Length: 624
Image 1 (cartoon, rainbow, N blue to C red):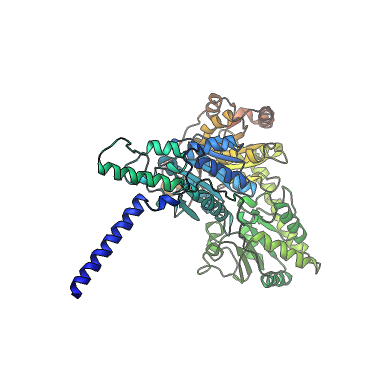
Image 2 (image 1 turned 135 degrees about the vertical axis):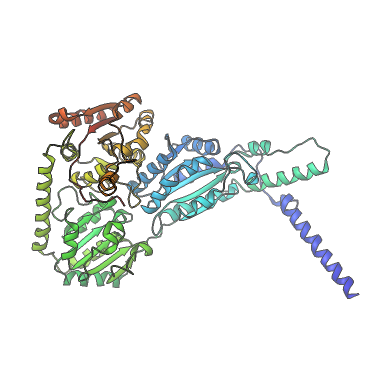
């Protein structure tokens, strides 16, 4: 008898399990409780657009594709500017620039499969630059994933290592909460990219999805009727409660702030120091502290500063406390070094340039970056996982109460070295190269004609690195470079995003001739969207950053050589204006720059192709 009961129990459980699975697939019970407006022509793309607009997004960047069309159309209808580029990487680079300069997120929207894989390098660059970029990607319908649909790949596995947050939206009702979380995560803590995948059937209207899903209305087959019920349930689940009232407003962004005791400890170390030094990284320009407030705090503090990444220009072009030259010497002599968002990676020789005798204060939002290489070459006396600008502002408030001032002798020593090196560089700029123009002279002439509100975008190797020592950003958030990843090809996208953020400012791209090849086609984008840009190409017909090391060490230039190509003619073919500067044009470099500026002011995009020679300015620099 007990055996019979056991068999009955097993059979009953099996039947119930099958019925539950059947119900899950066909939704016979749930159907009674669903709220679906089958007559509505609204679609998920409209919700995506509304959420972005509610979060202050003014521009999105894209390369069109069928999977994402509803989002782009909806954005255009509600007044969010849609800028389509010639490569998906450019769309992400442009979004990156907007994120860095606007204090909110930048948004790139690309189609499924190869549209998304084309963004991988740009998304990784945003991750390493700690830039809050939102990447929205199309996808095959959820029901068709893994079944050979057009451009269907596992996109999530590609983006999870690159992004702070990844999600695939399965139903229309999930769009708002998922997007709000993604937008918050992008900006919170250590900012970074996020990825949202939208299967195509979450973006089109109910009528379109139900008509394309494959239901056969006239059938007598029981099997087909079951398939029909399954497909009907699938679509109804996507649109159940799709248009319920939702709050689109942003979630609060989480920013780590220093504690009072951490601020006090920093104040103590500064008061005891005689030769303090601050090294800033890009994190210093992040919200919530406005950059002009940080600048005022630093000027009151009076401690010499080295500025890197997005912090270049923070103190203007001629600040007495800003230094660029002989950083290694200054670090060896300093008795206190404050790493304000700066990281001990290759840029600081993994921490080896820091003196063992120095006290070290390190502040960084990212714990891993905060302690990077501290197990080998350096040790922080105070390590604070917090916002760097907030710490500086609070420290200055405390020091103001005791009338602190940095030692004049120390400031004058570093400033004297700075002026000495600048004089030496001016003399190097006048030295004739074997052929073509001296790159230092070209860049120094450019610096003389730059407007106070201009934005500099640097994209290249050797020529770009020379520009970093020669060109002086006039103010905060007026310098854009790729960041720690050292990515070539950022120029076209960065300039696009920068110009949209500051339409009244001139935007200059300083290209190496190698990097120019990645995004010169975006002059077509500038022309179509009436976004005038100026670029200067340092054309030495070689990948000089690599050749400078490879040729003397390995006695070969294989893979390094380019041609003195007529890049300005490419721009002219794309409705821009082009100039070329040769050796014989040395006396009219400034005139050409001024003519380019005038044309740009009239609404034209311009390129100046400067043929340059070789100098010893960066002798000894390395490429790895």
